[in-house]
Length: 228
Length: 327
Image (cartoon, rainbow over the protein chains, first blue to last red):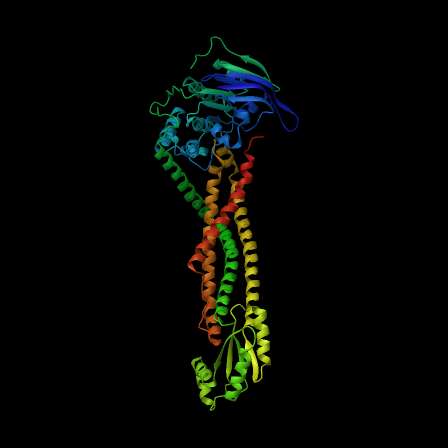
């Protein structure tokens, strides 16, 4: 599903965000990406969603080198990735429903199908009753769940999340992480960047540890997580 | 990658990305309809600013339109003098038939002469009577004061210089009192009209560019205000076309409204000036009144307004789109 092959990302300032990072993630796997801030977690996710290009090495997604796709192909790559952001990045002037529907509208999903998928996604995150609400009427945890619903509504094969629990208290954070686990059990590949080591270790999933741009550990808990 | 278990939302085991084709077309149409209407809604929500933009752009379109209209009317006036190639030789009043015949023969012998028509004083009098305002004056004059006129039609292939030379030669003929020909002033009018047309084009291009920039700048502000939304849409896989679409529709609306304003303004100006122009034309014995823009012109103005504003919007969104490119 995902394969990083000796990927180096150097920013214009000359600082290396990633140094020869190699790893691969199977389809349906749930993996955490951890390390202190600045370790390169966000760079890994941004390379996957083609917000950035690798300086060296290749980033393969479903067998395709997304580091080298032409600009016109980037939207097609991004549509196959559900993205969750730390600050949720919802459109504050649209309802919850319209926010979750946005990727489906972008993909040109027919209306009836779109409504069905939006409701299904909201149902999964437990916000079926709030579809008419404005994002600002929701709590931080609910907003993040709307962000997750938006990411999964098009049913992408891969969901990536950058510090999805960064702004949440421990209980909400556990709830949100639980959603990702559910998602992976449904067959979706999930890659979550988080520096919340405590929470990550409790979930007993595979963990990639980055330090100053180098991959220093690839920890697989025993017993192995149930394969999807 | 399509093998999915998808067990959580029990009601929706629909296949991925395999909606029927007519559903896709319908969704595409829905998107356009939505973009068109929502962009109109945004313009309405900021109607003060919208009105200002539309007025500025409308004026920019109306000015060259008015100039072009003025020129078209002047050209129409000039076109009434269709026989401008002819050279009229006026003989001295009371010339004898022998003098007339001799003058005619002399003129016919000149180079570049096609035909010579003799108009005697009675014909001239009849013609004058037919013109507005002369009837009463002619009654007051007892005798016919008009001279014989020899109307000389040059060869059809004679150009302006040769007609000028012919007129000079006709003036030298024995018995010819004076020569009048319209070509000279017609040339001056044509030159003036050509200059005016050139001016209208220059003004048109400059003002069109101004209109484009006005809309471009307005859209640019709108784009800046919605930068976060654009960034999110790009992250979710929105193509450049998808991001541009609402702004292009907004631009098209601006252009359409501005062109409508320009046409309304032009008609208002035609109406306001119509009486004065009519009186002026009547004073010169012409029945011509000021004509407004034709149907074709009006459609052209609407189309030009839409295209200009659309281009302005296109350019304005381009910069923001570039920010979403990977580094």
